[in-house]
Amino acid sequence: MSRSKSDFRVFIKRSARRSLSLEIMPDGNLLARAPQRMPEREIWAFIREKEEWIRIHRRQRMERQTEAQADPLTPDQIRELADVALRVLPERCRYFAGIMGVRYGRITIRNQKTRWGSCSSGGNLNFNCLLMLAPPEVRDYVVVHELAHLKEMNHSPRFWKEVEKVLPDYRQRLLWLKKNGPELIARMQEGMTADWS
Image (cartoon, rainbow, N blue to C red; front, side):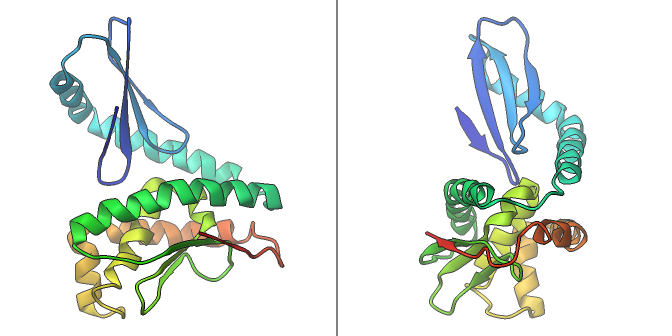
Protein backbone atom coordinates (compact mmCIF):
# COMPACT_ATOMS: atom_id res chain seq x y z
CA MET A 1 0.00 0.00 0.00
CA SER A 2 1.09 3.62 -0.40
CA ARG A 3 0.14 7.04 0.87
CA SER A 4 1.15 10.52 -0.32
CA LYS A 5 3.06 12.90 1.89
CA SER A 6 3.38 16.53 0.79
CA ASP A 7 6.47 15.88 -1.36
CA PHE A 8 6.87 12.09 -1.59
CA ARG A 9 5.00 8.81 -1.29
CA VAL A 10 5.32 6.20 1.46
CA PHE A 11 5.10 2.57 0.37
CA ILE A 12 4.57 -0.10 3.03
CA LYS A 13 5.77 -3.63 2.28
CA ARG A 14 4.92 -6.35 4.78
CA SER A 15 6.76 -9.64 5.17
CA ALA A 16 7.76 -12.25 7.75
CA ARG A 17 10.42 -9.96 9.20
CA ARG A 18 10.61 -9.05 12.90
CA SER A 19 11.55 -5.38 12.76
CA LEU A 20 10.56 -2.22 10.90
CA SER A 21 13.03 -0.51 8.55
CA LEU A 22 12.97 2.50 6.24
CA GLU A 23 14.62 2.87 2.85
CA ILE A 24 14.87 5.89 0.55
CA MET A 25 14.13 4.65 -2.97
CA PRO A 26 15.92 5.99 -6.09
CA ASP A 27 12.96 8.22 -6.98
CA GLY A 28 13.01 9.86 -3.53
CA ASN A 29 9.96 8.00 -2.20
CA LEU A 30 10.06 6.07 1.09
CA LEU A 31 9.78 2.31 1.48
CA ALA A 32 8.79 1.02 4.93
CA ARG A 33 9.47 -2.69 5.41
CA ALA A 34 7.22 -3.92 8.21
CA PRO A 35 6.34 -7.15 10.01
CA GLN A 36 3.19 -8.81 8.69
CA ARG A 37 1.03 -8.09 11.74
CA MET A 38 2.38 -4.71 12.85
CA PRO A 39 -0.52 -2.21 13.25
CA GLU A 40 -0.46 0.59 10.70
CA ARG A 41 -0.55 3.25 13.43
CA GLU A 42 2.79 1.91 14.78
CA ILE A 43 4.33 2.13 11.32
CA TRP A 44 3.23 5.75 10.89
CA ALA A 45 4.36 6.65 14.41
CA PHE A 46 7.82 5.26 13.54
CA ILE A 47 7.88 7.26 10.30
CA ARG A 48 6.97 10.47 12.16
CA GLU A 49 9.69 9.76 14.72
CA LYS A 50 12.27 9.38 11.90
CA GLU A 51 11.26 12.51 9.96
CA GLU A 52 14.64 14.20 10.43
CA TRP A 53 16.50 11.05 9.27
CA ILE A 54 14.19 10.82 6.24
CA ARG A 55 14.73 14.47 5.33
CA ILE A 56 18.54 14.22 5.55
CA HIS A 57 18.82 10.96 3.63
CA ARG A 58 16.39 12.04 0.91
CA ARG A 59 18.44 15.18 0.37
CA GLN A 60 21.71 13.20 0.27
CA ARG A 61 20.31 10.74 -2.27
CA MET A 62 19.06 13.55 -4.51
CA GLU A 63 22.42 15.31 -4.30
CA ARG A 64 24.26 12.11 -5.28
CA GLN A 65 21.92 11.59 -8.21
CA THR A 66 22.40 15.15 -9.38
CA GLU A 67 26.19 14.78 -9.26
CA ALA A 68 25.96 11.61 -11.34
CA GLN A 69 23.73 13.19 -13.98
CA ALA A 70 26.24 15.00 -16.18
CA ASP A 71 26.31 13.23 -19.55
CA PRO A 72 24.16 14.33 -22.52
CA LEU A 73 20.89 12.41 -22.72
CA THR A 74 20.29 10.00 -25.57
CA PRO A 75 16.94 9.92 -27.42
CA ASP A 76 16.12 6.65 -25.63
CA GLN A 77 16.83 8.19 -22.23
CA ILE A 78 14.63 11.17 -23.02
CA ARG A 79 11.83 8.85 -24.10
CA GLU A 80 12.21 6.94 -20.80
CA LEU A 81 12.03 10.21 -18.84
CA ALA A 82 8.90 11.18 -20.75
CA ASP A 83 7.29 7.78 -20.05
CA VAL A 84 7.98 8.14 -16.33
CA ALA A 85 6.76 11.75 -16.35
CA LEU A 86 3.49 10.66 -17.98
CA ARG A 87 2.93 8.30 -15.04
CA VAL A 88 4.12 10.54 -12.21
CA LEU A 89 3.17 14.12 -13.06
CA PRO A 90 -0.54 13.61 -13.82
CA GLU A 91 -0.89 11.91 -10.44
CA ARG A 92 0.80 14.84 -8.68
CA CYS A 93 -1.44 17.27 -10.62
CA ARG A 94 -4.54 15.41 -9.42
CA TYR A 95 -3.24 15.40 -5.84
CA PHE A 96 -2.46 19.12 -5.68
CA ALA A 97 -5.45 20.22 -7.78
CA GLY A 98 -7.65 18.60 -5.12
CA ILE A 99 -5.91 20.60 -2.40
CA MET A 100 -6.01 23.86 -4.36
CA GLY A 101 -9.56 23.48 -5.67
CA VAL A 102 -8.67 23.95 -9.34
CA ARG A 103 -9.42 22.10 -12.58
CA TYR A 104 -7.04 21.72 -15.49
CA GLY A 105 -7.27 20.39 -19.03
CA ARG A 106 -4.79 18.30 -20.99
CA ILE A 107 -1.30 17.45 -19.67
CA THR A 108 1.55 17.34 -22.18
CA ILE A 109 5.14 16.28 -21.49
CA ARG A 110 7.83 18.04 -23.52
CA ASN A 111 11.59 17.94 -23.76
CA GLN A 112 12.74 21.51 -24.03
CA LYS A 113 15.58 23.83 -23.06
CA THR A 114 13.58 26.88 -22.04
CA ARG A 115 10.79 26.06 -19.57
CA TRP A 116 10.07 23.65 -16.74
CA GLY A 117 6.34 24.02 -17.14
CA SER A 118 3.58 26.22 -18.49
CA CYS A 119 -0.16 26.73 -18.17
CA SER A 120 -2.22 27.90 -21.14
CA SER A 121 -5.17 30.27 -20.94
CA GLY A 122 -7.35 27.21 -21.63
CA GLY A 123 -6.04 25.43 -18.54
CA ASN A 124 -3.78 22.94 -20.34
CA LEU A 125 -0.53 22.08 -18.55
CA ASN A 126 2.89 21.39 -20.07
CA PHE A 127 5.85 19.94 -18.19
CA ASN A 128 9.47 19.36 -19.12
CA CYS A 129 10.49 15.68 -18.99
CA LEU A 130 13.80 16.76 -17.41
CA LEU A 131 11.84 17.34 -14.20
CA MET A 132 12.18 13.60 -13.62
CA LEU A 133 15.89 14.24 -12.96
CA ALA A 134 15.03 16.69 -10.16
CA PRO A 135 14.09 15.77 -6.58
CA PRO A 136 10.38 14.95 -6.06
CA GLU A 137 9.88 18.07 -3.94
CA VAL A 138 11.16 20.23 -6.81
CA ARG A 139 8.85 18.49 -9.29
CA ASP A 140 5.97 19.17 -6.92
CA TYR A 141 6.93 22.84 -6.79
CA VAL A 142 6.66 23.10 -10.59
CA VAL A 143 3.28 21.31 -10.52
CA VAL A 144 1.92 23.66 -7.83
CA HIS A 145 3.39 26.68 -9.66
CA GLU A 146 1.51 25.81 -12.85
CA LEU A 147 -1.72 24.95 -11.02
CA ALA A 148 -1.53 28.31 -9.23
CA HIS A 149 -1.69 29.96 -12.65
CA LEU A 150 -5.23 28.60 -12.94
CA LYS A 151 -6.07 31.11 -10.21
CA GLU A 152 -3.62 33.88 -11.13
CA MET A 153 -2.26 34.02 -14.70
CA ASN A 154 0.71 36.16 -13.65
CA HIS A 155 3.49 36.28 -11.05
CA SER A 156 1.88 38.86 -8.80
CA PRO A 157 2.06 38.74 -4.98
CA ARG A 158 -1.36 37.05 -5.07
CA PHE A 159 0.07 34.30 -7.28
CA TRP A 160 2.95 33.60 -4.88
CA LYS A 161 0.51 33.55 -1.96
CA GLU A 162 -1.36 30.73 -3.72
CA VAL A 163 1.89 28.77 -4.08
CA GLU A 164 2.87 29.45 -0.46
CA LYS A 165 -0.48 28.22 0.85
CA VAL A 166 0.37 24.75 -0.47
CA LEU A 167 4.17 24.80 -0.20
CA PRO A 168 5.33 27.11 2.61
CA ASP A 169 8.94 26.20 1.73
CA TYR A 170 8.55 26.86 -2.01
CA ARG A 171 11.49 29.33 -1.98
CA GLN A 172 13.87 26.49 -1.09
CA ARG A 173 12.54 24.36 -3.91
CA LEU A 174 12.75 27.24 -6.37
CA LEU A 175 16.32 27.93 -5.24
CA TRP A 176 17.29 24.31 -6.00
CA LEU A 177 15.84 24.68 -9.49
CA LYS A 178 17.65 27.96 -10.13
CA LYS A 179 20.93 26.51 -8.85
CA ASN A 180 20.81 23.04 -10.45
CA GLY A 181 18.36 23.50 -13.31
CA PRO A 182 20.93 24.81 -15.83
CA GLU A 183 22.98 21.61 -15.42
CA LEU A 184 19.92 19.49 -16.16
CA ILE A 185 18.96 21.63 -19.16
CA ALA A 186 22.53 21.33 -20.46
CA ARG A 187 22.00 17.58 -20.85
CA MET A 188 19.37 18.18 -23.53
CA GLN A 189 21.02 18.06 -26.93
CA GLU A 190 20.05 20.49 -29.68
CA GLY A 191 17.37 19.35 -32.09
CA MET A 192 15.86 16.82 -29.66
CA THR A 193 12.36 18.18 -29.10
CA ALA A 194 9.11 16.26 -28.94
CA ASP A 195 5.74 16.21 -27.16
CA TRP A 196 3.98 13.37 -25.34
CA SER A 197 0.50 13.41 -23.86
